[in-house]
Image (cartoon, rainbow, N blue to C red):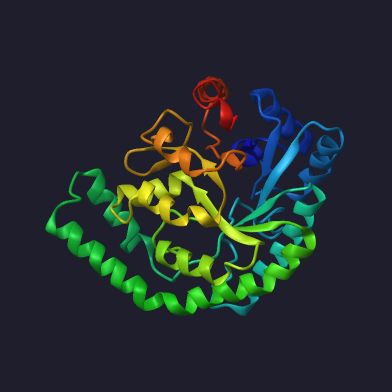
Length: 308
């Protein structure tokens, strides 16, 4: 199933129906309703859905955005936060997202589970700068990466436990609504869960059909570029838990949410890990031009007719 995320044009619209119409005009009839959506756009989305303009593949938490958050900030509230209010707000907003996901007959709800409290400016960003400079094989890079991993390993257990607790509480609600919880791979190593934790998490819930894994092509490629994993090797490990994926490209080393075929991703080797019919959602930056997307869609349909 090929679909398109509203993250591309959400910020340009005040009316939900017009937002949906612009995506339909690109050539997509199946749409993922993404985070950052204001409550004011929901009536227009309902109108478009009722009129049969689109089908909803899934929803990305939080949908709609918390009214007190003025920007598109899906991580404004984290299940892993040390603030009890933030953890409760995260749960309350997720329940609202599940309710709307069910209304729009969505198959899944994509979740960000939180993070370990580490300053990205001290870890991911310096490593990225070294890679961009071609220094990924230098002693400094190796030393900094090992220190980064050790620091995170020391901090992680409490925040992993909170993520598990949140999913255990949400799973019965998801079952009631008939919407799967799709735990997304993240772009920063500080985020929760990392790949080792993701395997543990999925095994923890292996008997629960309402919890699975959401593969973000770009996020995983960013970690691949940093030398933190091998993209194809990771997919080979996590495929049994796969619900679907966000499709976008990456320009070396760390600019993601690019239009497919404009970056470094090798879709021919990645797509075989995804069963036919698996949701594949184009999740593109608002800076991508409509004509560029249309051209890429034509290429995709020609190269991967069974994924269209």
